[in-house]
Length: 187
Image 1 (cartoon, rainbow, N blue to C red):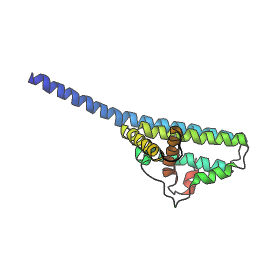
Image 2: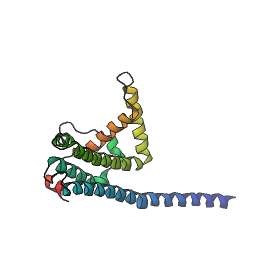
Image 3: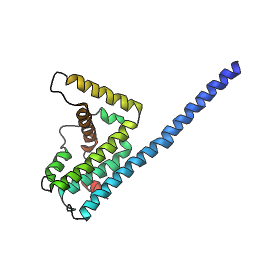
Image 4: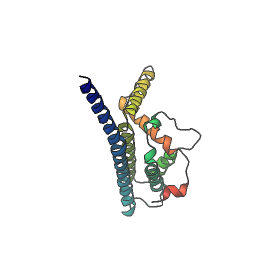
């Protein structure tokens, strides 16, 4: 009886160690590579748009979105659930506002394609962050519930809009960190 109990405890410990190794040494690098592959694919699509003449390479809309994709590629290893808790500093300019302004000079079809690339990037980043840990899922759910409770007395906002706003705010946390402009434009 005592031997069976010790064997069961050892098997459980070995299984937990194996699970830990699987998560931290196999699954995490796979997730990071998967995110980077998606971001490279989106950047390639942006490049093809410029190559096909839909948008000039020197247009601010192209340059800013390319810089944004490069920032996400360069910081992909730092994307964690903690960014859901951080608030973007207000004193630093939001590059997305400049990007949105630059889109006004483009045809509507090109604007939609660029916004679609940005939306797909945001979805890839936030799904990477959310799937990263159960704690992140818990933080996100608590935040959404808290927002829905706070907005209960004000105008009603659909839950998907609350989630979309949180996703954009979370991505802005990383996007607003100042960095060397030349390093961002490196392809």
